[in-house]
Image 1 (cartoon, rainbow, N blue to C red):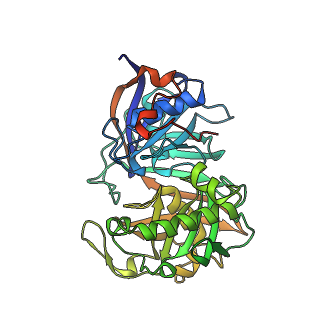
Image 2: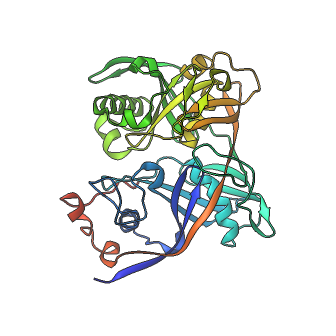
Image 3: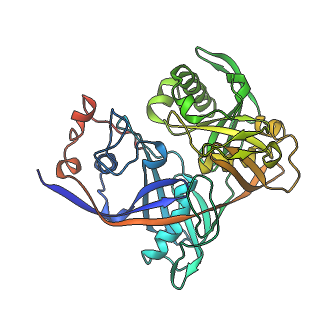
Length: 395
């Protein structure tokens, strides 16, 4: 059986990886495009390993970036993010990925779409602008530097990302329900306090203690607790409905598995990260466990961290409650399973003005992605992987 080949670049951005495609190299039919993404990453894979593609078996390594010339005034490139489910034939476009956003600037410079060090990006998922400040080595992005990013081994060149006017990225409002704290009635669980906040991506924030957790548990151990996973998904779906992202619990589960995400937050405490290094309570302002596509993130999804930093500046929210000692104007120091992440967030009169974060990124491989040729033409090309006709949820 012949294979199609599509020009692509494989990149790490922050603590995630993605296949980068030029928009002009992709099928115009959305369903064919989604089948291409699934096949390129090796999904859907009921074994959860994505061995037949470039995915790594987790939400952090099952991502796609689509890049094209900027179509807005003052914009260098357009960027569309796609989250590809590992185990089912679903591709979600409802939100952005901050980690992969950090690789867009270097990619654009290397591909001749922009000149560094400043690259203005328009994210089509959220209709928001991102200013990337990319350190340069001559006329190419630098990769060597002294910046250490928790969750990534070694050091690299620090990329600054300014997410401008991040509030209401998906729902149109920083507080989609109009209040910093809601009481969700969760089927099978009952009422639970939650803060539903939309900044760079919508999030459902709950107290870790309300789920019987401290907020510093091992992600690997929590992933084995299927009962807990079911409760978290029920909370996520209820939050999606309350935020207006999905019309029903069923739709939230089937059509928008990546947005919103759930974050379980707790006040500062001593703990050890997944590398065994000690983190002191006085080094963080709050701790968090983020759930992405049903799994506990080994670090913290960057858009989740940005939303959390904004939420910690919203009086009355659950994150603000957890970070009760947060000083005005200071960075929000987020304790997560891989270490500590500081972010700067500015909220004035209920409006999120900006969030600045720092990341590293690197081109890993370039060339062509190979997929079975029928993936581009046959709607049933991936059916044998799921025992039925493959479906996607592109909208």
